[in-house]
Image 1 (cartoon, rainbow, N blue to C red):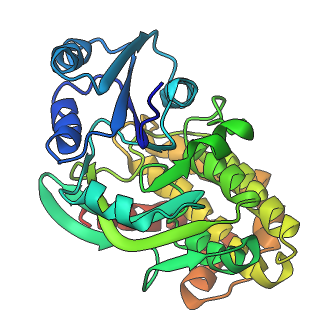
Image 2 (cartoon, rainbow, N blue to C red):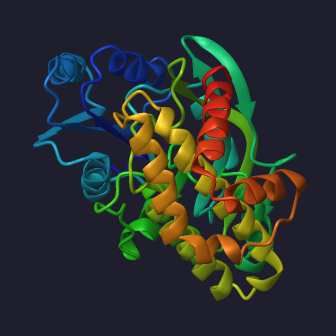
Length: 337
């Protein structure tokens, strides 16, 4: 059986307006040694019909339909189905740069287990910002070389997403790495922390190869989640465990402290998402309860930079009215970014 060079897993849920663009960003390029694994996650719009029509004239497309069970389950199913030497993930509303395959095939080396690259953030068809992982291309030859740089990739959140990475399929399958299905935020980071914990051969390509799309007024995750902070604390514990395993926890504790302080504030900024139906009184109560419940974690945090220090001082006042006011200001800033 022919082994494709690359398997591209695309979970699809109600993406009738964008899925064609995602698929055509693949098929329009002069590269056919691949398979496109589309996992329709119980869409209720025309997504499945669109994918079916596109698959009729393209043997690279393998289309699967499953009951709605979330993006992690869809991606895990895609991993099971993947036959390519390498595997990557593309969201149905994102799309590749026109030179994607030309670059990745030149960058991947024989022993590469993970290729990581930059991405563009596109809002309503307009390029807002380009994010690059490092200042230059780097090939890491062993796990110790990579770990020092991995800390900066965790800190700047370049390690989070699966769609700016290509993985050696055998490495993923042999270690039974899966996206967690019990959370619906941060599942990408959790998966990638598993991937990098014992990895040896990593290549960083300092070019933007995928376009990540957001709508005006949306953050990276648009739905309000009352338990956002609890999930983030759990993810930070996973990061802590990884750094501890690498024996570099103590020198990077300040990074974790900075992240947790900002996660506290981010959970309050989320109170101004359109999907949050709390009244103003309920927002104040929510802030009060979170600060009481998690006070010990906040108290122990150091403040490695001025902005983190200011946020911590604000949060430690436990003045829900003032905190909510600043959360509104920061939410407005985020909405206009």
